[in-house]
Structure formats: C-alpha cells, structure tokens
Amino acid sequence: QSVLTQPPSASGTPGQRVTISCSGSSSNIGGNTVSWFQHLPGMAPKLLIFHNSQRPSGVPDRFSGSKSGTSASLAISGLQSEDEGNYYCAMWDDRLNGPNWVFGGGTKLTVL
Amino acid sequence: VQLQQSGPEQVKASQTLSLTCAISGDSVSSNDAAWNWIRQSPSRGLEWLGRTYYTSDWHNDYALSVKGRIIIKADTSKNHVSLHLSSVTPDDTAVYYCGRDQYYHSSDNRFDPWGQGTLVTVSS
Image (tube, rainbow over all chains, first blue to last red; front, side, top):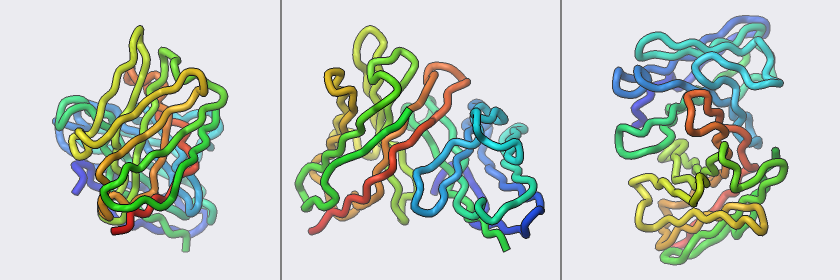
C-alpha cells in the first residue's frame, strides 16, 4: 500500500468537471511538492502537473492541481473521452525509506 | 527530448534483467537531470527503482526494495542509461520505464518525459 492514497476510480460525463484526490500525511505530502501523471492505455505516463499546481508547456489548462496541508487534488474540467485512463499522484521524498519517488495507487477515470 | 528503451522482454529466473534507455535531445551528463528507472505491475503499482545523475561525479540512489540487486549506469559515449537487475524472480515481472527528472535538485523538479515502457516477463 502506498503512503499516498487515491480513490481507485472516478467518473464523469463529457463536459463535466472531475476531481481526483491524493491524501497523505504531514511527513510526506505536507513536506513535499506533488506531481500528477496521466497514463493512457498503451502510452507512456505523461506529466500533467508538477510543483503542486504548475503545468508543463503543452498541457491544456483544463488540467489543474492544488495542494492544501496533507492533501492534493487534480481537477479536470471540460471532460473529454480521450481523458479516460489512469491518473497518479507522486512526490519525491528523501526522508522516509531513503530517497525515492513515491506514487499513489492510481485512479481509473471513466468518461461515461 | 525523447527516451527510447530497448532490451530483452523475456528473462529467466536467477538471471540479470538488462535494459537500455537511449536519450535524444538532452545529455545523460546534464547537471540538471537525473535519469530514473521505474516499474509497474498489478501487485506493486508504480515503483521507483533508482536513478543516476552527474554533478562533478556520478551518483546513484536506489530503492531499498531492490538495493543490492540493482545497478544503474550512464554511458556518456552512447548518451544512454542502463538498468541491470540481478537474481530476478517472477515477482520482478513488470513494465519497466525510464524517465528524466529535470531540475531534480529543486522543488521545481519535473519528471518528464518517460520512455515507452518495456514489458519484461521473468519465467521460472
């Protein structure tokens, strides 16, 4: 079990806004920045958000991230069918169990 | 920047799993990048394995779960990074990815891009 907890599934209809949560503790999320990755079937994972809320160039502004205390969230507005896939939160942690990237368990997003 | 992975997809138990990640558009010895290996399996989810980076000398960090069995090496002449995981068991069956962690030394680090992934199956 990951120290970052995500809901296993989420869903929405086209055009809706969906939010995916990532919860941790003061010893992990509370002290580190969070990234979000999109993993579509048959593709390599793709960075959507870094440093809690920053979007790399090329990522649509439909995707937004936030962090508050020991939780982080990814919001997807204007949901599209091509958004269907798995989403992971992650952080770099060099305090617990040595330096390492820690990933959430992932959330499978279904576009109804 | 693109990362292209190569290596055998079938490995026998007790042998060494070896994969290569060829880098284009960046340098393996960049002072701003750490080169990582991650794997994904149904039982473990996404699991970070380790990284190598260059700052005056080469440095490595490895996950405790594979420490002692893993070596990640950079080859500057070929601009690639390799993964070697020894004494594999069927539990090491997974999709293996390489990835760049740019600005790894700051809070603005960004893990991008990833390689295309290689499904490695370990047979007993």
